[in-house]
Image (cartoon, rainbow, N blue to C red; front, top):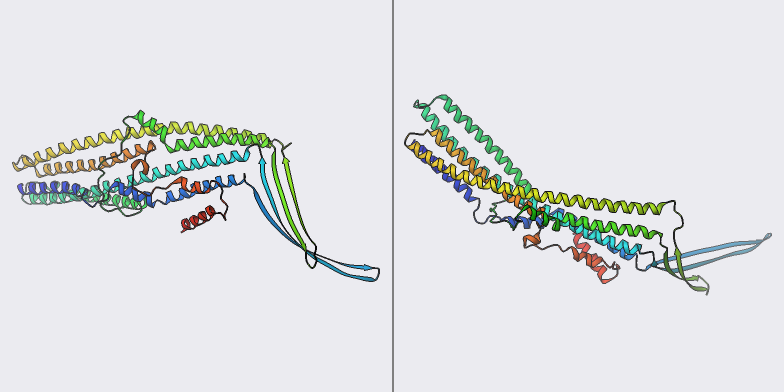
Length: 468
């Protein structure tokens, strides 16, 4: 009996060592995983490209306010054959070529084109907030993947240790059966518990394999040794503070605010369709007749004005449609505010529950440790059975497994609360990464540079590098 208890004590020490090994040096930290997720995210690359496409909408809208120059070229071959009665007069032929330039400049359209530029700018600002939302999702998924790998890796270690304990229990039960201290029922019970432990270990290993695959997908590399997070960022002190912070900072709300502004500009643009459109045009044409000294240079300047008279109710319909879209976007903003507040409040409550769960698990481990040591000592005096000792060891292992999950849940809940307030970003976390600047590309294209300009050539080079 004493030897068995000593072995069980050794196994209990091994289980403590297993938990400690998970925080060994040279392990990857959570911040390192977040950096890898940010740097390797294809989803972020996709949405950055979407944002750059929205930047180009501003350039295209700006181009409508500038002059437009088109060229044209024509070559004409004319021939004729004449008769006077039966008299053939002969053939004549001439070839004429002409080239010309047409220039047009918008002078006035009721502000419709200028409003279109402002709408595109609001769309860019909205797309930037979408990119922030994607960034938060990428980082939160990385936190979930990181903590799940730690959770299941430590659970596997505990299950392996538990299996060793139960094998010792079965061996002890068989020894006692051989000397007549217990019956076959006790041996069968030990065998059943061993089989259940083997099944639990297989399930834990399967969960760990799945968690590692998700980690590879989310972080962009395989999961090695992962260090326990030392701390979490500063969090709101109350549910009310979390809600207020979420309403101020959440990218989904900011996105919809820009969408509302864009919809309001759309109403003004729809009203401008009633205004006349005034353009100034110019044309220069040079023509030359081959095999002749005849040539001509001609030009013209045109001031053109046009406006709607009747369009079967199309323009009033456009105005009503714009109003409905504005109202729908405002309603969407109101709904989003309520949803974000609810999410922030729920995230705070979940964090409170996780913290309470961790405290309870720590207390459970303390009590289970005291109980195990006491039962082990009592067993050496013959007042407890081997099964009592092993049951106490099992309860201690279960308590440790519960603490592993509680710690993982608390960390995930903390970062989920951070995301619900709009602060789960590389800026707020102060991660040492090469941050993507959403204004850099916009500043290059916002004035609609020509392809032959210095800025246009820079954009061509940038596009080639992005395609690579």
